[in-house]
Image 1: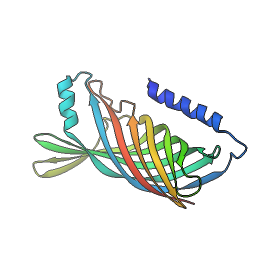
Image 2: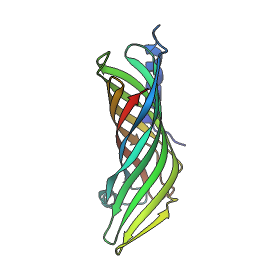
Image 3: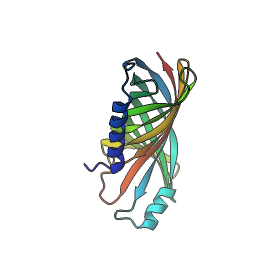
Image 4: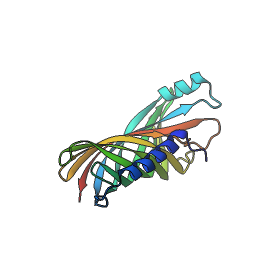
Length: 212
């Protein structure tokens, strides 16, 4: 598997930051739950498609909202630094429309991001942090629903690979026990099994959380 330079650079940044951030105050642990919405899409590159065909295909794709929610664990590495792994169940969905039919695709995934978290503003509450790190996504299920001549047809989609990975950048605002985060997943892997086309998943997420 060819992992992109961006993905490797992010992992290296996490390791370097974690080592530099260690202080005698490290070790405190927080955990909690979060839930919200995904807005997902896919971006095709040409491979066997012409640039014009890939552009036309991308213009026919529109993001759709889907559920996202799960658990997080935060391990302090110092006053402003921490590591935050998460376990997120996510619906990633988009619409593809052409002249004759509309297809609604949904991929149910288990996302496992590992964030390097840095507090930008505030020490107590409220505080604003930046989140940056790699994410691995495991496909659980994929379906297509087609609208053709007024009829709706649903079928499993076997065109997507079981594994995806990317780099996630986001921001998190904490107010007491509550938090809100906004993040964007820059997909790095080709998620299609077809050699004729190549596509990456791009996802914007916003979630509300509670620190237990």
